[in-house]
Amino acid sequence: MDIVQNALTFKQYINVNLLHMKRILKCHFWVILSLVGMSFFLYSCASAVEEDLSEKTYNENQDDESGTPYSQVRLTDSQWNTLLWLNYFGSNYIQEVYKSTPNSENSNFFIGRYNIAMMLAMLANGADEESKKEISQYLGSEIEELNSFFEFATGLLKRSDNQVKFNSATSLWLSNNSSVNNGFVDLLKTYYDAEVYSRDLSAGSTKEEINQWYSNKTEGMIQEFLKNTLPPAVNMYAGNAVFFNGKWEIPFDKANTRKEIFHSSDGSETEVEMMHYKEQMMFYGEPEQGGKVIELSFGNGVYSIILYLPDPAMKIEDALPFLSSIDSYCFYYQKKVNLSLPKFSIRSRNDNVKDILSNMGCSGLFGSSTFSGLGALQLSSLSHEAVFELDESGAKAAAASGGIHVAHGTIRDYEKVIDLAFDRPFYFAITAHSNFILFSGIVNKL
Image 1 (cartoon, rainbow, N blue to C red):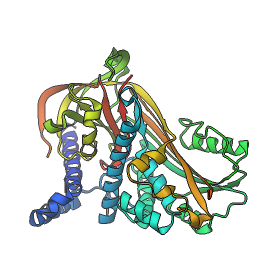
Image 2: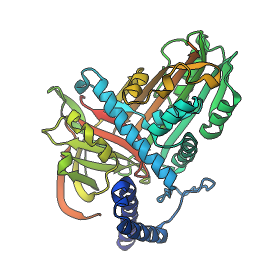
Image 3: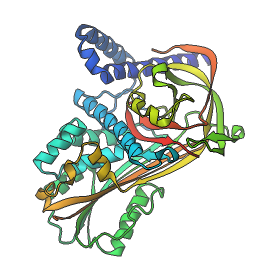
């Protein structure tokens, strides 16, 4: 039994290494381009070995009842490019939210990065050519490539691990006299599986119906997304919701949870429930990034959470420039870690997504004539809400976005045990297949 177990562990070890070899090649492609010969050699070797060891490649029409994760996901060059740009966009977005929030050092943040990026791609399909080009340049891919990517990625994420629940849903609510063209509606149905409803959008019953839709799609985590009845001038409302529920691959023992102190950014101290366990886990630490990163897996290991703890002398705002590299970290070790991690929950809401995107240089969706092709509509507001809960059994997350359109007007083992206590501000992200970053957040205060 020990021999079999060791063989499986070694095989998983190699598979993880191969995924991150590929990640290294992709996330540092500008450097690699300058070393063409070495790049070609490394990529050829990695691909050849991966071909031999790959147990399963994702197939859109393939059913798998065994619970075995799709451990190898081969993306095209176009899909890799789209994924890397979307990850980069998400890192910049949470940084901008942090910087633009008053008294941010005393606030917690959580965003559904996949949710926001998908919403932008959806809306860009109805934009005029100039605005569509701006969005394409900002997100790093043509709109058609974004559509195909989200269709592929959503299917993949829903089916990757039967021990983890992931769902993404889209809805389009049209006024009874809406002039939105059918091409836009059909496109959202095709690529985003949009549910389309025709309603009196200014009716109180429609507000309740939309809120019920969000609640259903997030399993009750987001219940009152629309705070007010939609104004009479609204001709279209677009909604998107993402839900995640994963149990730890190695759960925390509740018997080891005890009250301990969390040191918040403002210097205050709070007694929290701190979970504990000592296990082998992926560990990453670079002196120039001033902190340590670990990765804990959910379910069968396809989904994971990355946790970044800055050095004690650093503040979260000092670590913001490192988030992009932390999200795409490539070099790590497997070490035994004596982990202390607080149970916590976060709810974040931002009704100012329009201003956030504009500050980032992405204002193309908000022009007065941007959606002229949809019947003289203008995107008047864009809101986002996200919820996260973490405890001994696992983590749950949900995110919702809504837009209102109004009429024009290398692995090594070390025996040494590392003590790592997340008892001060930290950053975290929920990922899939090591590369798809779905949610991320910052904990400053508990």
